[in-house]
Length: 173
Image (cartoon, helix red, strand yellow):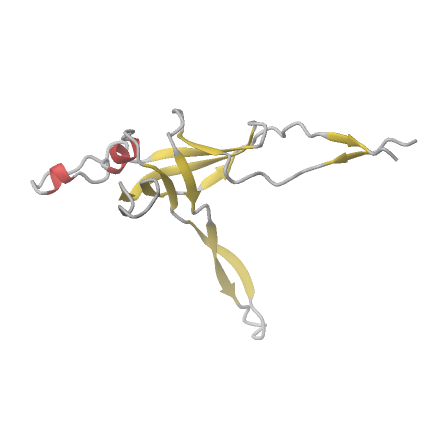
C-alpha cells in the first residue's frame, strides 16, 4: 500500500478581510473594497527598417482609485479623513483647509477560513477624493444605511505573508 499525499488549495473567500490605516487599528465595519486595479500604458515602437510590425513597450503605470464601503455608525474616522481635504467650515470664509496629514497608507488583510492572514496589500499615499456619508434613504426599503469613501492612491504592493499550513490527505489506495 503506497501512501501518496495530495495538497488541496481552494481559493480564498472574498468576504474575509479587514482594512486598517498603516500602524493603526482596523477600521470598523468595512463591508466592501473595490478598485484594486493597476494598468500600464502600452507604447508602440516601430523600427525604421521594419515598417510592417511594431514592438510594444511598457509605459506609465496608473492605479485606480479604491472605494471602501461600510454601514453608517457613530464612528467618525471616514468623515474626519475626508475633512482633511475639504472643510465646509472654512470654505465660505476664504480660509484655507490644512492639508497636513491628508495622505494615509492603508492595509487590506485577507484571511482564510481558519482566520489566518493569507494576503496583505499595502496601499500608498491614499487621500479622499469622494465622500458619501450616507446612501440613499428610502422608507420603503429594508436595508442598512451605507457610506462610501473613494481614495486615490499612488500604488500598492502585496506584502509577504507566510503560507498557511496545508492539510494533507492520505490516499487510501
